[in-house]
Amino acid sequence: MPVYRIHRLKDYQRQQFRSAPHASGVTSVKHRDYREGGAVEAPTVYAAWASLQGSPDALAVGDLLETEDGGLSICKYVGFEEARWFVAEPSTV
Image (cartoon, rainbow, N blue to C red; front, side):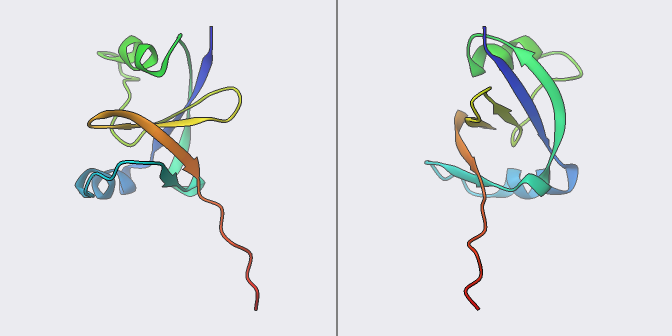
């Protein structure tokens, strides 16, 4: 069964994320906006979300689940969508 690493959105970013308009497609996220939040074992991201509901470790909007191979899913109001870590382009100056 897959193990998902949990990345919690930092509190100072949570309100900004919640008030941003929904955009479909891949969401770009930055490492600095997240903190490690443990792991959960579940067959799917939705099963992971459901297993944590009602507990102090419940996933909130903006939190990420990362698969063992590095795939990211972000929790949004409409469910989970694909996410990618933001990688800055090298400066050419």
